[in-house]
Length: 548
Image 1 (tube, helix red, strand yellow):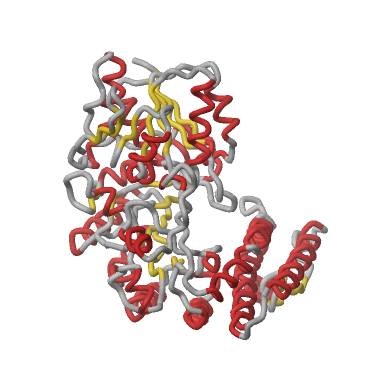
Image 2 (cartoon, helix red, strand yellow; image 1 turned 90 degrees about the vertical axis):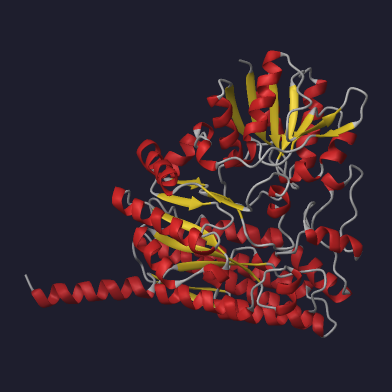
């Protein structure tokens, strides 16, 4: 069998994002290996490496098949690398896959002769068949799911095969990520695919609609827990991040499966904690309580907005009241939660942004994702949103290459919103740098509980300070003034305050438990944190009461 290489080229906007395994490549690698092929995964994005690193890994090699994961934010880098590899003498078949490649395959094949094919939709079965045909020297252009050029240059789009039974697929290969998984103690698991929702900005439904089958498919509970048990045994995994678009799935069937997973986790006594993602209208107390008993520690909620107009634009099929009910349920059960929100959309008004900020303040900074204040609606190819925004002339103009290189971020109708967003977005690097400094203040593996808690409080204070600066920017824009000078002063002040906290930590004050009070934004952060200090005082009192 010939060698197959699967790669992910690091693209723009990767800074500050938590590294995560590319399970798509892992599933493809496992399927190919089961088919008898030799496979290597080269994930430059995960390892924080450049295209030059990938080029070095490929230098002198002639794989039978080279596949790239294509995303909107790595398309340009990937295609430039492919052209570079071809000029360097690489002769093997090059294919692209993923949502972005699927929905821009026409333009890609028209503009990039260096690319031989695109695998549309889910790729495990198609990629194995493509590799088999290449090894055997047989015609490959009629492989289901494949888009390619005919010998005369005409575009060919083959039909797509039905969606695969997930239990028939092998567990994803972890070889490329083994060292990181062992060091971190956590891994990603995909227990289902698809979503029964129909959000206008999401390409999942359109992607899966290419192939006959249900919009939400799930692995059996035994298959899921078998994989988690293997991760715990072979890699020392103690925490799992379920990357399912909707872990709970639709109706009673989805809940029953979630409860069965909880029961198996308890029965096998794996002691693994986990995070799930869910829609706000699909959370109920009894299911959450059972999952909490089995190790659930956090739910990521795809609320997206509390503004009725935005919810309608996003086609969420929920309401602000349903969002509030989901939060209340999680609070009542005692499960931590994080809320996904998309703040800026093409039609947003300053008054609506003010209302959204009020919601953010009510939710509290610890429940908001780090970059939510910078979040802007993105219209990806293949989504209903992209079609409607194109009709309204609110999509960014494509680059010379076409739709595959178009920035998915939308334009704004209102000039005052454009000015606000431009001023605020210009501070994203400063905010991202402060966020990295806050998270790296303490080594969470070696720090004591007081230092860890202080780090979390600092991160929450940073979100609160950013929220305050954003609100002041809004008010300046509403009065017709520029927020840029205020933002310059505000972020400079936060940088100086962060430096003072870093100096205190570097001097050993935290390790020595020396009482420290330092300001960050409007917060005064105390070390040791009050809850830890109170615990210590109670312990001292108990010792004094018992005597020698």
